[in-house]
Image (cartoon, rainbow, N blue to C red; front, side, top):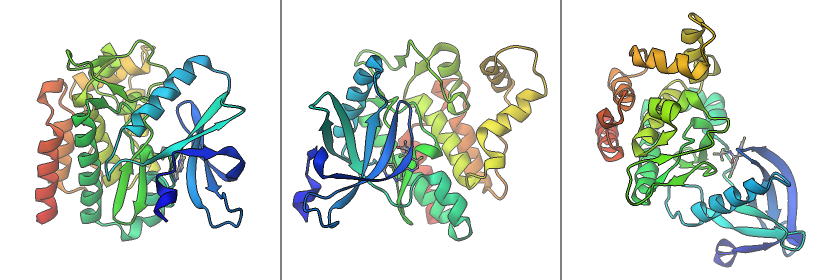
Amino acid sequence: PSHQQDQSVYEERHLRYISPLGKGNFGSVELCRYDPLGDNTGELIAVKKLQPNKQSNLEDFQKEINTIRSLHCDYIVKYRGVCYSMGRLSMSLVMEYLPHGSLIGYLEKNRQHVNNRRMLLFASQICKGLEYLQSMRYVHRDLAARNILVASDTLVKIADFGLTKIIPFDKEYYRVTHPGESPIFWYAPESITESKFSHKSDVWSFGVVLHELFSYCEHNCNPKRLYMQEIGNDMQGLSISMHLVDILKDNWRLPAPPLCPPRIYSMMTTCWGYSAEERPTFSTLGDQIETSIQD
Ligand SMILES: C[C@H](Nc1nc(-c2c[nH]c3ncc(Cl)cc23)ncc1F)C(=O)NCC(F)(F)F
């Protein structure tokens, strides 16, 4: 019934906890049923709770809620509302629940019946979601297969806007002050060395997501493992991120996944241009992916 869909305040007393879904940047997500009639006919929802008593996180959490509430796109996980508890002292973010879970688990489970065309469909949907984000001046900053949700066998959505920032109107990039525990193996060089984030750094990360897609998220060829194998060979006490930037400067890139079509691998390598202006835009990438799907 449509009235359930545009619910925006969920009363805690009708929330039925079912199971944990996972841990995010600074919150955990649980599967719940919102069951005001108390007869188990209510809708399943994903509820993101803030880790308790970290004040700085409350502001970030509010920003994450405001971000996802402002996004209306078929390729981005839907905001459903908020749930206040402890007399409005703490609040939770309510989102649509996607039953197939994240791309990583889905590809590991369904590898045998996901072919290149289906991968390209997923890639074009992620690209469209990112084009929409860019049109809203948002930089996701945490693009990775683990943060892509599977709605159905033919639809994926971008999720987890915990690190998303708005590019200021007078600049092309956002500079973070507190890098935190960063997913450096998905980061563009300038994000590692200067904490600079832009649409072009999201393009770099999109290239890494393409690599994960066409590797079927095989854990023994995930980006972190492949980079560490390359770096491990010449550890000289420098920090891992400095080693990573060094091999990227030497033009080493993630190798083509097994059976990856050459045209797709070359698309990934264009996303990994060392300097940001070398990298394509999401609209160019979208056109290239559409062309590959036609062939
Ligand atoms: C911390 C949470 N972790 C997980 N979430 C889910 C999930 C299934 N179905 C879901 N439906 C709506 C939501 Cl918001 C999450 C899930 N499955 C496994 C997880 F480890 C998360 O948000 N991860 C980012 C992303 F959503 F992209 F996977």
